[in-house]
Length: 426
Image (cartoon, rainbow, N blue to C red):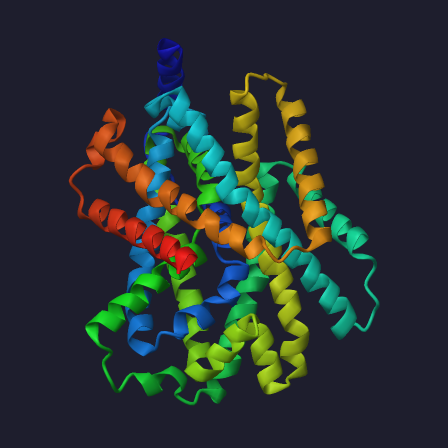
């Protein structure tokens, strides 16, 4: 088996280009696909969660945003690239850590991502139903029918293949970027200092550390796109061979720079418009920042645009998380001993996703927020800690040892997990 894997690697190395070509449309598509997976519905709550702590914690989080995002996702990408050619994350874990560990990580990987997919199914149904009723003044169809139509529409994109998913997300990114820019610029005349009122006094060190401790998970998961990293790494290795790591780093760095600049501009524009008390009111009302701003200004443009922006954001994130969730489910089916054909496996996965997402979206349970929070520590473990552990233990990743970024990623991962566990038990 190892000889076969080595021969596959050798064929990939032989087929790899002698040098990297210039930046191309394929790279841009992936850059926007990564952006599309990360920047979704969570972004619309980030100004509230990040701004409540005051100016200085937000400034520190803004400075940490790029290194937290880039180094963590680069580590996970390198982990997937360290496996044999064509192996996804579940197969690489099995290759490096054994069959039992591979099965466990595959299970955790699936249950970390799938609940988020369910949440997006519910959020999408709620957003479209509210838009039909309040903005278009049309009585929405029964919830069961509406949710089925919406999920079938997204799964129709999924059935076109992984490349079509990435292309669809990259196309949806453009209106989302324009919308975020429009809103951020629209708020500039309304800047009244907002959060700057808290900048005149430095917080106590203990209070500052406590605020940062609880806020870091918000930043981590607002920029998280780990569900699509495995497919991204596999595609880069297939396309660039031995040069996959270098080109992957370039794509990741540009995607993360775009994420950080766009989102932080939006966040700061919001928190310079609203006071900490207003942000707390938005959180108490369980509203996204768009909904609160629409009510705050009584502006028909924002009231009409907000649900459309939310629809694009949720749809993008649904498609990106579907890639990761389906990858995990397929891994579980294969590791159970069954060996269906690839086409049958795709159909089984799509049918399961459709039925479960439709049932949950129809029932609209309030417990989904707890499920998302419970999935948080697992995502942090896979995104931050597992690649760092592999660097220490796996010979194929030995060349990454001794880098300061490894310590940074490990610390952020431990902080994120401890803060999430604390928030669950508090």
